[in-house]
Amino acid sequence: MNIIIQTIIGNLQTLTQEKQITTQMLDTVCLQWFEADRRIIRTTTAGGREIAFRLLKEGQRLHHDDVVYLDKQLVIAVQIEPSDVMVLAPQTLPEMARACYEIGNKHTPLFLDGNELLLPFDKPLFEWLQAAGFAPTRQQRRLSEQLRANSAPGIGAGHSHSHSHDITGHHHH
Image (cartoon, rainbow, N blue to C red; front, side, top):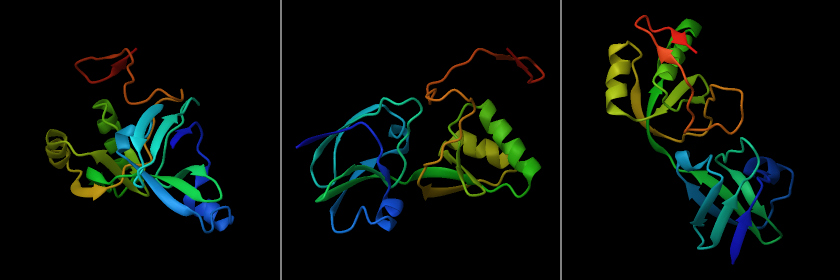
């Protein structure tokens, strides 16, 4: 059975509360964080079902516990696998702003989890963050809510923009 997914139905908890999910069998499709905003993915669910994502809407991104298939017998939900991440917990708004600004200048994917910033683990960046006084920790966490620096939807990880940094570090467009 080859299932083609073109839309996200909703969230597992919400659909369960709304009684749309009751006795159905639950199957999961496991993805890495960096696969979550791909438009086309071919994979196999934990239960061995062939599944293909064809997400054509601009800026659509898969999240942990997204329900992508639902009928009377079966529910298929997305599971974002935990990965090796760096966690920063800035204590003040100015510290948070400085952390986001500095990390943004390095063009590293940045995720928000409550009041914590999460980034994919990278040893040189980890050491730089330590030296800059941000006290990062290394943990296994799920990267799900990615911060986007521009308002145009769908300009994901491979974005590019033309600007140069002069010797003072200021942007020039």
